[in-house]
Length: 113
Length: 473
Image 1: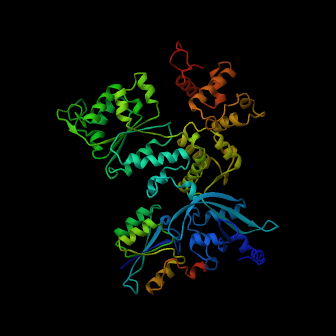
Image 2: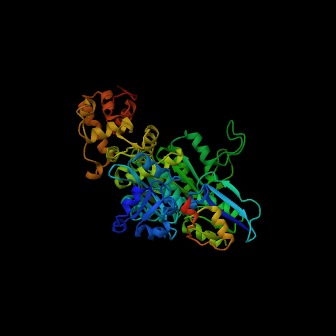
Image 3: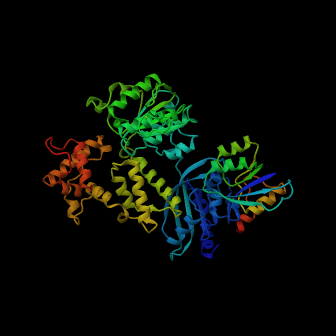
């Protein structure tokens, strides 16, 4: 399964439509398969990022704030979305694999970065 | 968090004070990390103040103005407050336009200990009626003035018919964007939108561009060319500057509009087309009809639906929004931080009539953002031509004999509800009277080149009939 995180430096990017970098990881539901890869986007565009997510066959998106239209689009495409997440992408990914991630979650790493 | 700030907060009255203000408020320390947010911001972001404590402010605000924190750090470093417009994504996943007032928080000994960020919800005034749900279009057409709202309300109605549309309005008012918006929202939205400028090409070339030609139609026609009508098949053909279309071509266009078929140049077989026509012009077509420069039948054929775009000077409340929009746009493009205009510079901009409309406003903002080396754009950073206009209009300066000699400009058109052309004509006459007919001096006083003045004299019919048709000093 594939998971995509919109990132800004070591954190989850505050906004989906403003993200210029994403991390894509493959996993079996419990652990990662190989190293996550990072993609630098040519510019900020929620539309193009959505296209990328669909083309990559991503099953789950972890991001910051996202507009309702894109959220609905992903739900329609049967892509799980954890939005409004604040904290480091490493911790978010870890929490997700442990089944503990929730939308709107402020992770402990958000306060120490 | 530094001690000074903790000391201030320890006085205990700040939460109540913040909650008493009906705007979202975030207080940060020097590292731009949240110290407190008020109830309004909690409701907007869905983040509780206690949970937000110590989190970098933009992770909570989810704004489009932070530029990875640079905006906030610039205010901390510069010590001057900044007002910038942008948006946030709320807890219920709505993009809400906001005015952010970012103010350094200073102790009595003027030591900056943090920031206070006030968010003023602009959604009541910014949302362009009729274009919600179409972010690509609504982002490219900005306006909340009553005149633009009327335009926005007409766009969906015009999109849902097949009738020809005639868009009128001065140069730079956004006729192209409106035409594209109508096309995008129509059933033809997924089909081509082809634009052709009827005033930019000589007659023969325009004809071949519009209707295409077949191989061997003329010397150099080495292969078939489909032409714009066929390229726009199923979609929309946007004929801009239709008022400048040569008369012979007007006949052919009318025939195509009536029959939906035509012969390409040199062709023997008729081509059938299904194309919707949107035409635009900055010229008064009705007048051109009476002057015999535009066919009356074509005018009525195109003028099924008419949409008039107001000039910027009649959209006073939009000027500030557009200024902020372009400031953000150029900051994003150059990768710098968002600059602001000083109060005085802003006042001069608001007083300026912008005869070139939004195109001119955009160019002015681009000029200022490139010229100004500081965070705040001052009067000295404004284009000189604009200064000449605004000074002449609002504050004749004793220090400048050049400006002081300009006659007082008539009332603003929006105040007097007068047509800009008549005001411009009056202004030219007044200035020429002042300079005793010397056009070079008049042009200098008006801040125009001599050619511009000459062109405007011609437009307003101020040239004597015996005068040769070239520029005279």
